[in-house]
Length: 135
Image 1 (tube, rainbow, N blue to C red):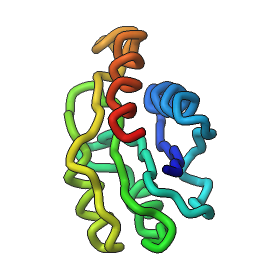
Image 2: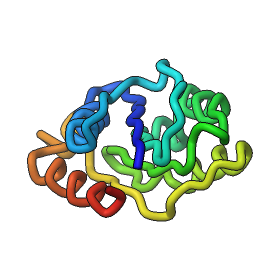
Image 3: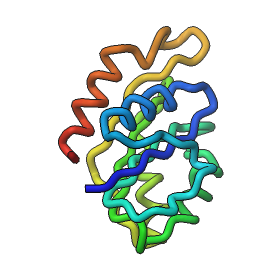
Image 4: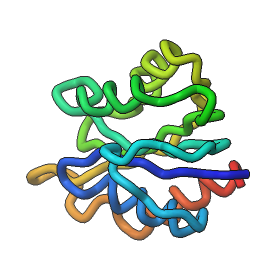
């Protein structure tokens, strides 16, 4: 299996998860400004809710993907209050004909006075446990 890890973050919290996931997979975590140029079986895509939606940059990144190069997207991310972004990611990936796994990893992210210290070591451990099912 081949993997790539891409992420979008404004706070650095999703990058924390992306870096840990990439290390476990033996690949580099890269921001979504770096295209997926190699063929991968699974693209682990990190993102979050911003103003009740995925960021337009995430939408644009998914729109730039080549279905011949990406076998499947597995979503992960952090957010202070909202939960899953998988439906939003799937809606965009469906337009490109790229499947999105129904399973995703999501944890709380710190925002102002909410969720201090998140993602924490337990969140990272849980993220790694989650991705091992795809290895």
